[in-house]
Amino acid sequence: MEEFLKQLPKLAKDKQNENKKFFAKLKKKPPKNLDYTMQELHEDEFERTDCLTCANCCKTTGPLFTNSDVERIAKSFRQKPQQFIEQYLRIDEENDYVLQQVPCTFLDADNYCSIYDVRPKACREFPHTDRKKFQQISNLTIKNVAICPAAFNIVEEMKKRIKV
Image 1 (cartoon, rainbow, N blue to C red):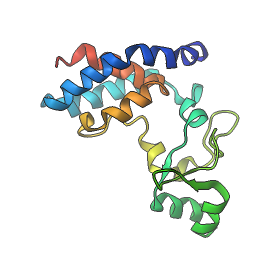
Image 2: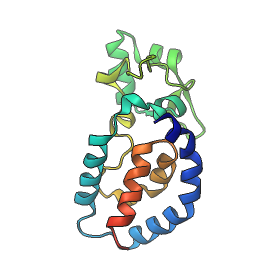
Image 3: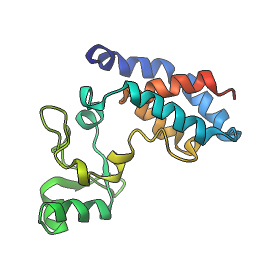
Image 4: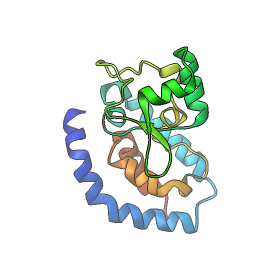
């Protein structure tokens, strides 16, 4: 996994134009069974991929925190939402709540998430490869391919299976 993670940014960059063209075609004419296919690819990949051996998403990027995320996590810490925000978050260029720093404050040394049960929606859904109407998040997917080995593998398999 370590070696693949080192190579991932270059692999993703090498595939970027190919992926952009593929997703542009996919967006224009998504197959009827796209959601089903993506669910299947996602499930197959995550039978092989153990996020605890990687955690690259937690080490290199931070999720967006919705107001519901803030309230839920603050409650679990027995804090007021504003206290949680001041302690852990900042507002980014797009006016979203994000972590003050990466790697994620809540990532333990063994790659476990210390707030796993109340983690943000963005973390629960990452890498978003099983999302409905998958073709609508192509820009996000192209970014995630450079971060997540599973997303990279899913997109590569997707290009083999789905003819556009």
